[in-house]
Image (cartoon, rainbow, N blue to C red; front, side, top):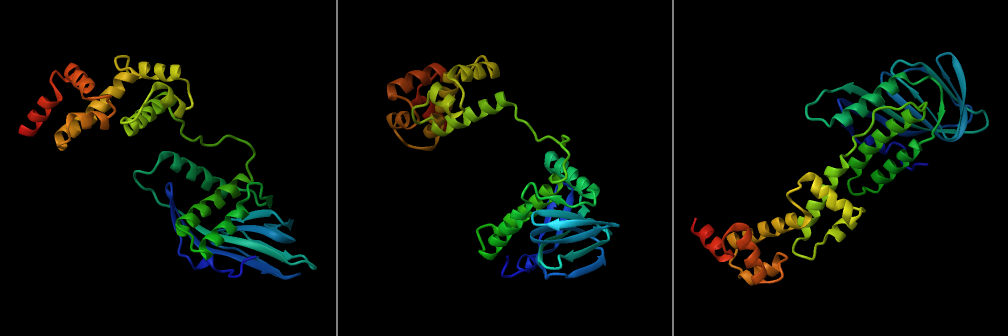
Length: 297
């Protein structure tokens, strides 16, 4: 499968995930010729075994299990196991050896902490029984190998993420359907309001309407109108847009020597006359007076 079976092993990979540090000790492909036996042994680390091709058997504890293409099993620290390829058919095994130690840190995303904790605890408690690779963890090996071999942009970071994916997908293969830690859910009203503001700020110099902002959020204009009213009943959509444009005008008046007409056109106002009227109504002075006051200060 891999021309350089130990290519991934050459990388020094250490991953901080939640309150754990995961050190990759081995990351390789092993090929067992027909009838090859690996006698009972154990490791001090977690070893993930994936069978991409062939068949054989594994003894975990005192129980023998058949192995075939598309299966996986995990041996944790101290777990005795025996492996044997079929007498007439070779067997390949993708192996990932990781050491997982606690490493409490400040400022870590609490949801990352919860998910890392959930995964590690599941790995520690997985039954000593092979399972089918229902979530395609084996594909992560191939993706990591291809990224490393091709020195693809960000390949080291990609491989670190893929190691986490292997751990998660291996744990999922044994899931019984119970609900674990749930990911954070947005307050959609706040999210939509904040996204609308960001879009208005980025596009205020062009034509911005309630309809086209609502379209970006995949909601109706009426829904967006209600969102603005709920967040601040005193500031409608048009009032917020006007505030954004006036803030931009003020910055231009303070920082540039552009004419009022140029500023009006640059910041979304129809012309200098309209800007003059709005500015005077909202700030109690003309744009020229504001510029003079700011520059004198």
